[in-house]
Image (tube, rainbow over all chains, first blue to last red; front, side, top):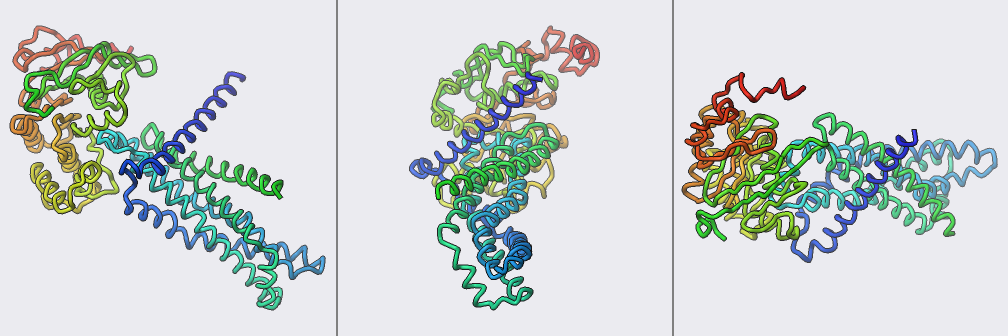
Length: 261
Length: 262
């Protein structure tokens, strides 16, 4: 039992170490690579940004839109009893910007793009494409991981902004149509308690989540072994571990900002 | 050191290379020299360690013990930048071609040129056309690897391997999975590259037809050990029962897969 536990712990420690090593490697290529004249090709970064970002717009919009609706209805249920239903607007906007939009967007991207990245890199690993790159003296981290990392780090916060807006729009619809709050008044209350700090907090979270998705999915992809089955396992692991780490990081960051105040 | 300067000297040298995977010795104390300009064939049964040996030479696998030098440089004792410089002087044709699925045939062949040279796109286009016509694949530039046959993919892999005009080309089973005609063309191509461009070739194969057509020297590997090394004629007339059984494809003999598994 203890040996088993030790083994699991050791495996996890190795996994975390692998992520850190990959992160340092990526930072090297971001900050040192350009001076060596070696960076990712612009086309591949744009290609990845389209895949990660543009193609996720519709799903992020709907996920956050419905969340805004649900949030408005749920909070109205309580706030109405306290005679404070007007404050639905600020509750929706603040909780979306600080918390829900970054997390939900990150989960959507991890499920959609993170799994695809792990599967693609995993397939490349088991079909010797990664080895072929190395044999051609092309660093796989620079060539494959860097554009995906940059795309995620830029696009997750960008999608979060979209998520903020679509969630507020969802809340707005419920507030004005179903709860009969005056639209002008609703928007006024929305921004009354929403500070730039709240949006920044959310965006910083989104940035961290983007890094987590990129590291986990690329690491799982690059360390895939064992053919088609291995690719399946790597994909599953990338989603499960990204989800877990995103929620854990969210908890840590929320606590950090809470106590900072 | 260009191919012409080193003629007759050792260009790749392995000394006491040993490698184990999960306690199994896959490569057992192998020492050999590949002479500049020759076509060196490594043959052996499936699982004998021949592909693993090739991967040691390309730097993909680090040996547990021993040294591997290419052009006098110990490839596991130099900085990664120096190793990359060495890698740029060789090409490799993979058993399953290992083309990047997301790139077209043209982009695959252009990849080493775009990454390692500052050539203008027009010149790269010309080089791609030359290399693709060398392997008989003009007209397929815009196809993706998934849209062409396995044999064609393999030839694209070969075009990619020679894109940078390397001094050494490694071939992992270049003719396996090809029809006899395309196999024959590939053999001729390997021979032509080696004779006309003085490229050193290291070929891993178990295709006996191809071995005797292309080889200058042959090494037979069995259970991770080199058991015979010599010219094709010496191999043909070898008294070694393992070699004899292998080149004749006898089911009976000292190589007994069923016995070895127990």
